[in-house]
Length: 358
Ligand SMILES: CSC[C@@H](O)[C@@H](O)C(=O)COP(=O)(O)O
Image (cartoon, helix red, strand yellow):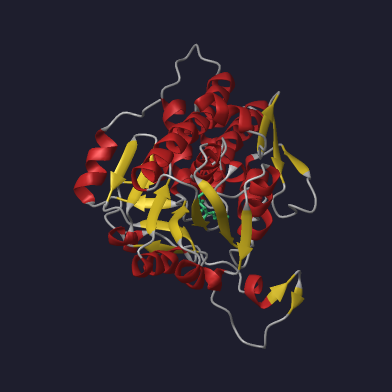
């Protein structure tokens, strides 16, 4: 299946070439395909904050390249470049709080920096580390896609109706996706009758990005309002909800795009299976439960306005952009280390003791 999956890979959102970082501006998709170039860590941090690039793994990969850009600038200036680089780590770490992949990638870059030998070329070594982070995410996507398909096959043989939320595809990762990677692979294996894509208010990642990625590849996809999900589960014989994650804690709780929690509650009520797909860079074993995850709250104007124009009454808005699904509502967490069914603390610890499967 690996070869067929690789052949189906088309979209990419992060392009590192000859020391230049280019990001596909996801705020403009699908109407415009605009690539923006970045020269500094601070610019990359802004791109993450402003959602030019989004999706947990893509944020981590971009931050790693951000460190490389920062290092190059600090080396050019000379002096105590290591101390100066701390500012770049700080600015990148403050770009968005919830997706742990950001901090995971920054830690990996820092650890590599700490292991430099006096004879090493720092720029060459850190660039190689950022590329390795990017490449390993791509590999993880391939492994998870295969494991996710096996999981669907264990329950169902023919084409299924599957619901997904937000965007977890090529635009959100270094490969072709986490949840959307499983969905793509399931389509190639004849296991998809139709994908229902939640529009995902207020940034419309489902309407703009997921629908675009799937339609481009000929996967049958129908867009629905977020509020239609329970009705769809009741009336359309949906068998799976498949979503990604921004942070998974030691007990198996999952932070993901706002609206995921209500999908899990509804899935449980309707007997629909609930699969979370995420690389182990999304797992934060330092946090005991989802209660400890910092949930990003964005500007209320994202709800009060549409296209920069006020549409809401003169009230204040509450705009948390992630929520936490408790582990006991989750049937399976699929990672590149393997699958955990009915996650709990012991099973998560056992998963993290396994090696990556690629
Ligand atoms: C493979 S992406 C997994 C998650 O990052 C995704 O589901 C999500 O919530 C993205 O949120 P976003 O605010 O668009 O960065």
